[in-house]
Length: 398
Image 1 (cartoon, rainbow, N blue to C red):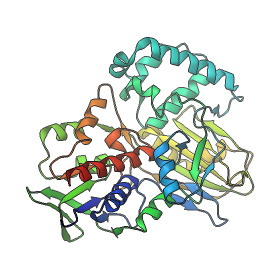
Image 2 (image 1 turned 90 degrees about the vertical axis):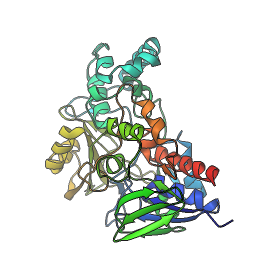
Image 3 (image 1 turned 180 degrees about the vertical axis):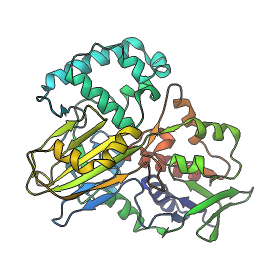
Image 4 (image 1 turned 60 degrees about the vertical axis):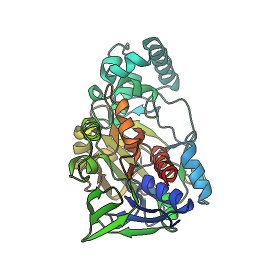
């Protein structure tokens, strides 16, 4: 039988993983990408001195097996950032003892167990945290951290997400790809037929084939993987006559917004992680592979309010976060909510919305979906897992 022809729309990690798995399974695969680069919301930057920082997806928990396995297959090395994603100090206040973060986490874990998953799924994170005694700076950090991380107000997030990847994470080791997280995308793309600068406008299917229109051309295949961010699928008339259940699910799902800032430093800065209280933003440094501190500071702000403030006041905010180290030049800022081909950072699910993911995890005719919004993960690992899932669905249909 002739090889199954598959079009993959989107060269982020979800799309590239699906394309790689499908090609390995004997399919004839073409990847279409609107940008002039691969990687999607993973974007690495290299300063003149060789320091590598991440302007997009960054944090990789050592427990996330899909991304670690992919790096190993691609021959890429992962190094310890020597940083923690959860425990942070509050800018303008004395350092918070780690025991205070632990005490708050223990209280919350007990409350989660007492409340139970069914009630947590129906509650907002804001209403759940209102039941927690305010124990001072650790709680201030927690609220600001969670709101910034999810990219939307806590009143729009399901309380059950407190026990998910962005919530009360236990002590862990955080990794990055040596040389930049975009190395994952570049290594996969090197073995694929990837066509950059092809902005797909419309996808339609018949009983016998898929047609994808974009970049002044039309492409035909037996199947397609749609691996573009949620707002592109939902808001642009991208799909031809999706079923009502899929249309409703896409319309109901939220998308967080966020911006990142990176700034080079004149010398080696201290290792720190510092949270703002007036906006949901934080700043940190990290380690090189040789365990020296990178000569750069990174910041992240979530929600519309936090993003607008960080974009407008990037230099001032970074310097306030690290007053003991001189900043070189102007910071680099990326507003992912304003970025044309993303329109946000990652999916934000409210109470009762986890069930909506079922609509994105099943085939729709000759089409399947990939991307972090398929499993609601919001992580590099989640995007990779979604691509593996999409490839598996199509290979089972072949």
